Image 1 (cartoon, rainbow, N blue to C red):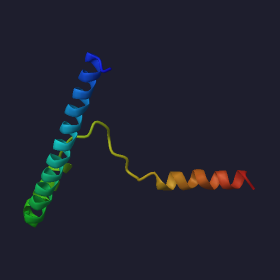
Image 2 (cartoon, rainbow, N blue to C red):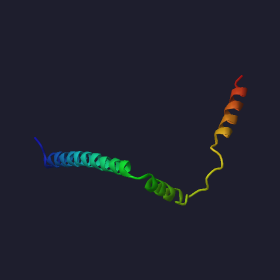
Image 3 (cartoon, helix red, strand yellow):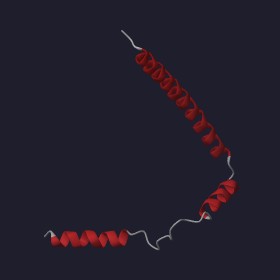
Image 4 (cartoon, rainbow, N blue to C red):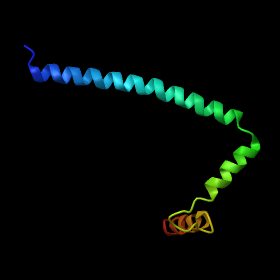
Length: 83
């Protein structure tokens, strides 16, 4: 025998599933529209947008290097200690 709480849970599940389906359709449509806009964008507009992104202040200073050299030094030390 189903109780009121079972019915409410089933209704909520149905609502959640409908919401998820609607969002999947919407997300696909938005992604398609975004890709279309990117394909139609001129090189000048793309460069301007990229420049604006680079102008956004970062919450921390950028490192001068990638860290790759430091990482290789650490690996080299580890390799030497394990011999």
